[in-house]
Length: 257
Image (cartoon, rainbow, N blue to C red; front, side):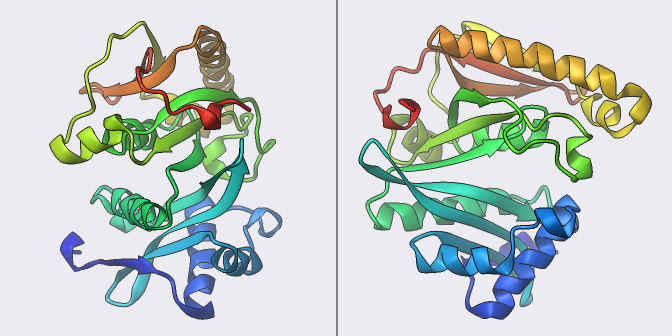
C-alpha cells in the first residue's frame, strides 16, 4: 500500500455511503442497533455536513463523517466519526481526512470543527492534539452509555471534546512548521500503555476503570481551573501524557455551553 496512491475526496452516491456503513462496522464492531445507519450519512450530505472518503484503487479504506451544529449564533461542524481500515493505519490517512474537512469548512466560512475522543486512546489523542492542533477543555462523563464496541472494554464512554479552531494561530503555526506553539505546562495526566490490555481482559478491567476514574477527576479539576489540553507526549514504551496549560488565544464561543 502506497499512501500517495490513496485518493481523499468527498463520497459520491449511495454505494460509497453504504461502504462507509460497512467500514464503520468493521472498525468498531458495533451491534446493528448502535451503527450509524445509511440514512444518517445521506442526511449529513444533504444538510451541510461532510462525508469524506479515502480510496485505495477504488476501494474505501477510510471515511470521516460530520454534521452541522450551532452554538451562540455560530455555525460549526461536529465530526462524529473518523475510521481507517486496520491494514491502512499509521500512514497519515486520518490526518489527511481531517485536513480535507478543514479545507471544506474554511471554504464555507466555518471556523470550528469539534469531535469527541476517548482519553484512554493514546494514538488518537496524539493525532488530535499534536498532529492537528486541537485543544480540549471539556469532559463528558459516559457520553454514549456503555457501548457494544470491544474498543470501549465495557467502561463508561467518557469523552474529551476536541475543539479544532481552523484559523487559530495554534493550528496555522502547526500546519506551517510541523510544531504547535510553545506553552507553559501547568498540569499533566498520564495514560499507561497497558490500558488496552487492561480493558481487553475481564480480570483486569477494574484496573482500567481506576485509571479512567483518576484521570476523569484530574481533567475535571483542571478544566474548572481554566486549563486546556495543549500538548501530548508518548514515550518509548508507548505511555501517553496529556499536557495542560492556559491557552492564550480568544477563540471561545464553543466552550460557553
